[in-house]
Figure 1 (tube, one colour):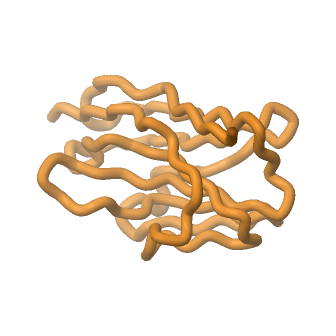
Figure 2 (figure 1 turned 90 degrees about the horizontal axis):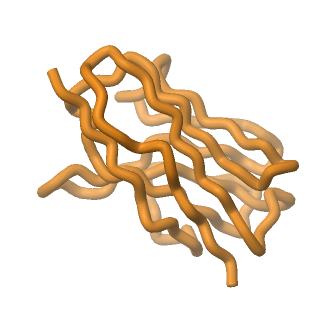
Length: 124
């Protein structure tokens, strides 16, 4: 049973930082890609960032220059470092994985495993 567990969410003021973690069990990063998605109340789920099996990354335009996705293969953990947070970043954040070499962020149907989510709230 492959499981993903997010942590690190919380409430911070605009301009602050948070680091989200996604611990994977029964899963390795070899020939796998992973991604972060978020969903704000009353809004559609949107892709935030993705990392390929070779380490290549991509980001939504709204977070470029502020967020960084990374992984620690030894710990089987995915991270999302979020800096210069804005109120519009408020959302439930989810990590997800697929048995693909590359993950996109414009669609989410191909992703196979999802975590339970961690809530991020940014106040102005």
